[in-house]
Length: 284
Image 1 (cartoon, rainbow, N blue to C red):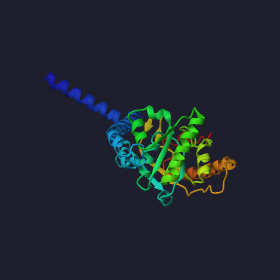
Image 2 (cartoon, rainbow, N blue to C red):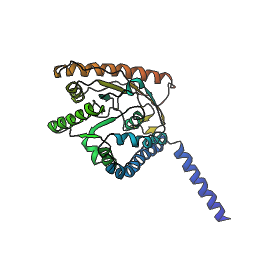
Image 3 (cartoon, rainbow, N blue to C red):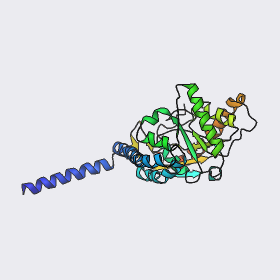
Image 4 (spheres, rainbow, N blue to C red):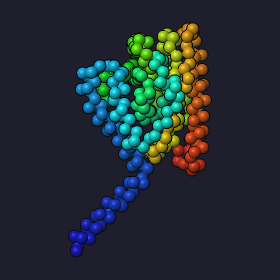
């Protein structure tokens, strides 16, 4: 009898803990983040031997693995809506510039390979050392640059630019240089625009909507939708390096307008007391 009571008490405690965790936003945030990193790392580990044998360093490997990595979005509760496919689907080399808000941005990129011919991402060299993901990324054609050594970074970008021109690759950069957790776009760095003008390649602006359902500070991740808008190409033909600053601000302004538009669209679909809206009107 006592044993039965102890088993019942234990089962009740376990169910109570499960129920608590099921509705605990801290648990959801950390669990989904952990699942994201474990799944991507596991897929990277399995892909390394394959990439090392077939086309090592070729961005076509990114397209191959993207079909598997897209499943990570379902595991962490993120739905993607990609707009502007008429631009994305063109087999044309360009410099893609996107706003950067979260490590989950990479999940959105995995969906881009479904419609785009070739995309080569540019990342800071520190990511290369985050194995196994970093090694798999390098074998999948990701271009790592040394942001501290500007001369070396220019050489690495020049190599990527030659690849873009030769194989109609879309060179993907985050011009803000780091993740931005505020509802705004930070000032852009010049590297992407130098490359575009030097190659006379168009700019393809890519705008992610805010992640209202993810807040690292308050530790919640409720799951939700992200809208990613691909804007029309901005041509650079005829521009010189003297036009870098003007081009940079022109692109940034178009992206700000698109960002505010899709942010307002998402806000209109959410209840006023949604935790993602509380304190999220700070644009500074």
